[in-house]
Length: 91
Image (cartoon, rainbow, N blue to C red; front, side, top):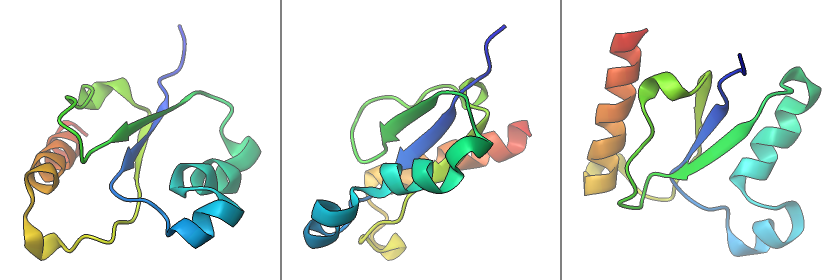
């Protein structure tokens, strides 16, 4: 049986100048984790309309930073909030 991947929930992008030199958030996360995780990584941009995978389909989640404010209550934020709550409830 294969292990479930770590899912990077992408909520934003690094600044262009930083991204040119250091890459974007998912790269930073994978680089920092390094050899501590030898399984797969999946990435999902929560700002899109693409349905999120089942909360049971990931070994862990990492949510990136965002320049958006939570006070915006944008539809993608509400979907992501519901997803994280469902995952927390599922344990």
